[in-house]
Image 1 (cartoon, rainbow, N blue to C red):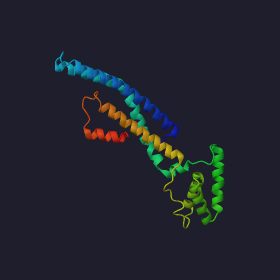
Image 2: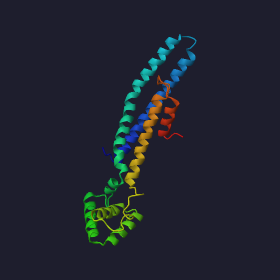
Image 3: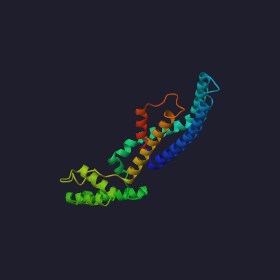
Length: 214
């Protein structure tokens, strides 16, 4: 499902807050577990010590669930929206001449009507200038005209290669950020002392790369 950049930004902020809370809780749990393991080994039998650690892990894990769930949900929604932001033609169709919907619709209709009366060469040159000046709403109109009535020599001028709208760029940046936050959460949940089963080095390295950790 499509999410606007405002919605993605809210998801990212929520995931960041959730990750911070997870980090703080895990840090406190790690300190308690380390203290328990280091100071209690001489006082208690190994079975008792292991049970205490397991109980503490279970207790902390329960408190992390809601925040972890928020990050997973943010990641799932970001991934669902990613296909829209990767589709340049779709994002170009959202480029506007004006922020006001009615004004934008009228301007687009005027431009399309004018392009229909222009020669192929003029449409191609208009597309080239629009692309060079990053006037993407105008370029999209030229692209539509070229698609509607195939223009001779328009292949290079109307290519979408190298084009990315501001909304598209920002959306992909937000989505990438959310995916990295999820990888960070996975590292904290599965790669810290609260996890009863340590991550394999290969898996830990994979998650670190996904999180953008050098």
